[in-house]
Amino acid sequence: MIYEISKASIDNRETLANLLQFYIYDFSEFIDAHVEENGRFSEYPLKEYWTEKNHFAYLIRINGKYAGFVLVKSLEAETSTYFSIAEFFIMKKYRRMGVGKSVAKDIFHIHSGNWRIFQLKNNEPAQLFWRNVIKEYTGGQYTEQIEDGTRIIQEFMSHQ
Image (cartoon, rainbow, N blue to C red; front, side, top):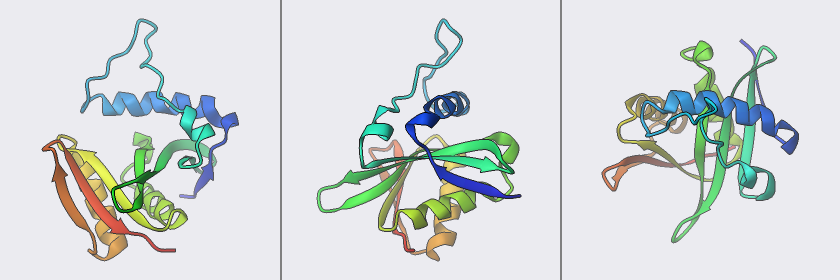
């Protein structure tokens, strides 16, 4: 299976907005999200991904077909800057084939430096996925903590 990661441009905003509908549908199992009167979830705020230099949007294609996306942010902490996955989505038909793991590792390479990956405490599938990816990527060299009893956070350093 051949996958491709491409940086999304403003020309891709409709494609990304449409893929986000599938993502929010999947994620609605873990958050309080409901469709509106038009049968769609409310629009995800994407403006910063076209206007801010610390926001990065990527589209994923598998065998030439859209299969998901990754939204990355560079954030300031008290003492450092770090990258974080804002949203990560691979369509269900392409899951459990290793594509998500490969895409995540490629994104870590693209943005080398400090990383913090967050998952909701009630989203156990995401925790399992990210723990496995990060453990494999770092050789177990990461830390994990629970924040406010609601989020799990893994911290590590990526390399090129």
